[in-house]
Length: 331
Image 1 (cartoon, one colour):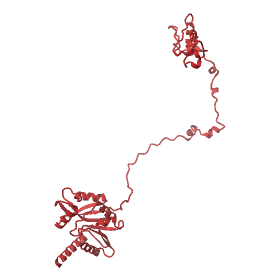
Image 2 (tube, helix red, strand yellow):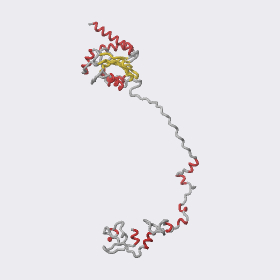
Image 3 (tube, rainbow, N blue to C red):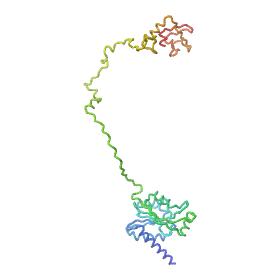
Image 4 (cartoon, rainbow, N blue to C red):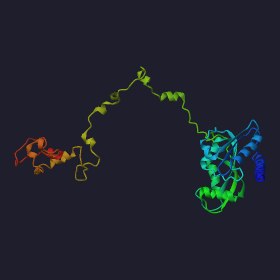
């Protein structure tokens, strides 16, 4: 019964020595080791002891169950390395929340080494493919993702995964990867140095002469100056400008041309329409205006605004009312 235990212990020691050389664990490093139910606690403790032998008294090694990592009290940026699924015969599966929590507790530039079973082909509700695993690491904030190696799963690991996730088929392999946290804290910001093309200098506007600017500038204080004289607009008119113009001079040049029959312009204002109306009124019948509303005889209060009887006294219905030529013309 003691032979298998010694053999298993020898395998763990060899694997631990491989971790020290491959993962560059040094004295003074803070290392977090994650484990799940697929591996035994004894094998995990042996791995922790081997790592402590390298980190020394100035280093720190913490062992944490992956199911309780998101509720742990680890401080931000407190570990140089995080190892997960590296215990022999482990088949640890990582969620995106676990990746994000590992990115939080890693120091800037810290490294994350882990193994996880993935699907070679086909779809699975819980198992990822290699590309999906890489995408999840990038979304969590990791960079420089490198595939270290791939190896087939043991029969015990394959049986354990099928029971836990209900996967059917044998299209699974175990993939080992390394991901690095960027050299800055999560949520930090930095100013970008952008180079912009220099704009050409604007053409300078010509400067006005100081005396010219003062000549065209008038302020409110200038109005109170006794030297400012305001000119009366009436003084600009001569005696000839104040004389009443001759009506004949206001006529248009072609208005009442002697070669043609005199005809007043439409809306005549020079008096020709009155003159022609006076000449043609002799012997002509005065047109009778017919009321369209029937209220013209009642007076101005009942008449329309355009009523020709506007301004005349009321009269009896049927009474003959004669309108003067001037009234008809104005209407």
